[in-house]
Length: 88
Image (tube, rainbow, N blue to C red; front, top):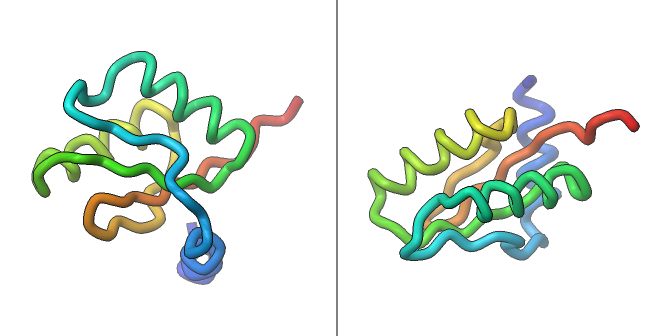
């Protein structure tokens, strides 16, 4: 992904609200399925991860790996990820 795209996605994500929240239960299969659904319909989503800094980093890497998404931005408890919509 080019730097110019990343900048554009950060700007687009600014007005978005988190569509998925990861709480005490962590990254479950149901949460991953919800992330997949959100990515399929929106491409660019925000996720709130309620965990300590190191765990947030690990979870965000796992989310991107499991979904094939690209991490656009990580600020505090919020991550922004992007994945191109699959062709129908």
